[in-house]
Length: 108
Image 1 (cartoon, rainbow, N blue to C red):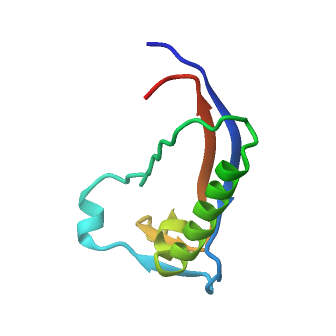
Image 2: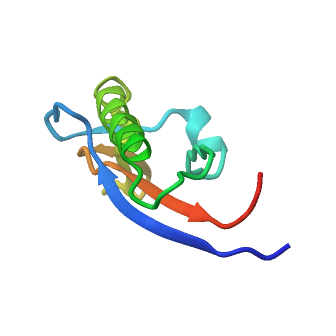
């Protein structure tokens, strides 16, 4: 089944209150597994109009909630870097997470 997906908006959402940049070592458990990306995918009923205020309001609330959640779960808005000893570690720099809003012309 082929269908067209149109990205309406792509934004990086950072924690609402940034913290001081710091490095965290990865645990032995972290080093056992390959790196993974954490992804969350939400599907909603297609809005009646492309600029539907209810849909726009909902995405704004989702971005705001994500920003608030990243204050406590700041490691999700970080990036993995290599240390001087060539070992991966977590750079807690509030890089943020990607937030995309897209439309697909398909029935769920």
